[in-house]
Image 1: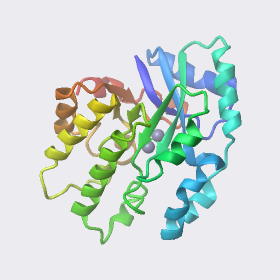
Image 2 (image 1 turned 90 degrees about the horizontal axis):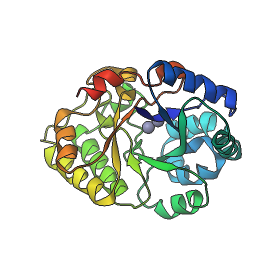
Image 3 (image 1 turned 120 degrees about the horizontal axis):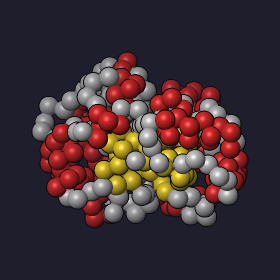
Length: 254
Ligand SMILES: [Zn+2]
Ligand SMILES: [Zn+2]
């Protein structure tokens, strides 16, 4: 079994740190780990956020703290070292890219030359709204409009030709908000677009571990993905070793 979504995030880019994640994965019976990092940790990707920062002081403040704090060279060098090291699990290295419509050329230019195994596309923002940061940020928002924006952005991501997979495809439900309309036509359109683009979709336990609620994908979305033969990959979204493979037994049974 493979965990397709693990962040080193706060650990140094060393084989020793990788070894801790491998040991945690092996203890849970995993054979392969897919490592990735948030692209905003690297200065090379910060130009992509400029419009967002100008429009939203909250995001500007957040990126002042988190943005560009790690070394892309260091990460790539670790991936290279890992390829030549005897680690207990198979490893792949990628990036988790925040997707913004209109930034496809920038992402292609930045990621094209990098020796990575995969690129995961994520919708973390609807317009300039950081919907997964805290429940308070939802106050006064039009829940239906946010959902429509989320589905529209997800569809564009799937059709962009940039990504190997789509992260946490219904993370918009993180704080329990549901649209008043039937989301199934959006699920079907997304599943078709993922299938056409050859992207996998994640069955990710991270949202559940952060905020509770429904574990993994909503049953209707999972059914739509299966009907379109989209590959569904298990993912923990671990940011520390102890979360590697978290909730996989339950996710695999859905
Ligand atoms: Zn994410
Ligand atoms: Zn992640």
